[in-house]
Image (cartoon, rainbow, N blue to C red):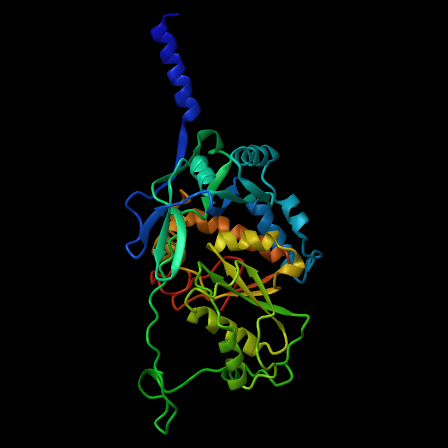
Length: 389
């Protein structure tokens, strides 16, 4: 064999070995509201979620239907996290290949059978996905995200469906001024500016008696908050409890899950509203706030990995987005960085919602003004296998 032929063969082998599948190209796609600053370093530790490919979707939904049907022998026979992991796992070869790859690249991963939650330093993540990571700032928030392509070796393409957590740029709209006023003889005034809805208003609307309004400490209700928009002022919650004359005075947050509360961030009106009304309506129950760093798929994964004592039994999600807009608007980079379209992201996330339901967790999702098909990006959407209100 000539030297030229040998070098050509070597180059071809190297090309094959180095071939990669691009999940997403973020070049020139950074939202203008975020400012890129310094390169990420080894002190930056990132968390990302990996969806492994499997063919368990039909089995998941069938099992949930049986557990949820009062006429089924399987009714209310919820699964443990271990049973969930075992029953709906990706093929063993898929799990081993993915876990081995990330382990070899210094990432620590927790497996739920069909997904991985991994943690690694910025340099390790850059090597894993052949990308570059930078700090970005917006208002008082700072995050680390990739700026160019995000890719995986071709050999993993048949094992990994998508990866989340490395490209999410959430763009919550600026808070608008609130209308203030009092109810007068003329009613609520222009556009309802003089009327307020309190927990008592809601109880009256739904005929909830005083006896039924008192909850049990054995019951837990949580609100899910997302993407750093979750700082809550505990003093405000206590004041709210006093002003609405709740029996549990002052109102308080009994438990927190997910990411820790960050007092350095601006107080979130959305998050405060959520916990005020779930706690105000559920006098006496254990109140949870679940802060989720990323989007819905990540929420499902973290709930599946949590033990029963470290998660709420009922979760209200007033953050969601139109099904058709999972790859645009507020969640744009999260979905787009996965290398999938909105339909693929919704389909897989719906499977994960169903698995959360199999743990015995009730999910309540606000459906928004226009429902799942809404093209209005400021409304929340609905999810399959969730209760929509």
